[in-house]
Structures are given as structure tokens and as C-alpha cells.
Image (cartoon, rainbow, N blue to C red; front, side, top):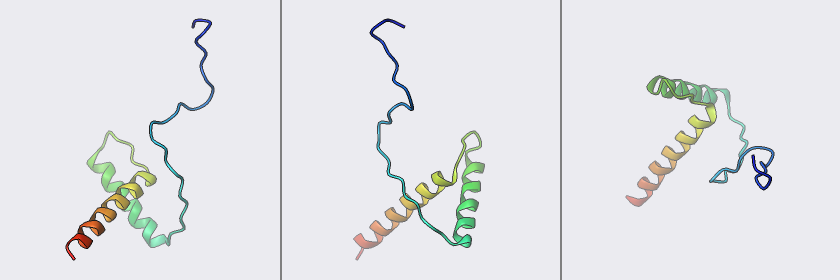
Length: 73
């Protein structure tokens, strides 16, 4: 490493800023999310799917469905 090149400490910056959102959910909804997460894991065996990934996918799908439902009215 050259004298002028110094590495910064900590995690590298991400290109996109994400907010943290904490929610409380009933156990039945959490189990449905976990089931969906397992289905995604089966569809993409080499990919690690987390509960947060599953929640993001479900939210995106739900928002798209709601948007298309509203545009038909």
C-alpha cells in the first residue's frame, strides 16, 4: 500500500441507503413469512434467503398488487 492510500475503517459504503424498520407481527404471520422464505430457498438453492429478504419481496409484491388494483378503479 502506498503512503497516500489509506484504508478507511469499518464497513464499506453501500450505493443505496436503506432504512431500518422494526415491526411486531403475530406468530401466524411470521410462520407464513418463514414458509415463503423456505419456498424461495428451494427455488434458488445456491442463494441464502433471510427473513428480511422474504419480507422485502412480499412487501414489493403487495405494493405492486395494490397499485395495479387502484389503477383499475
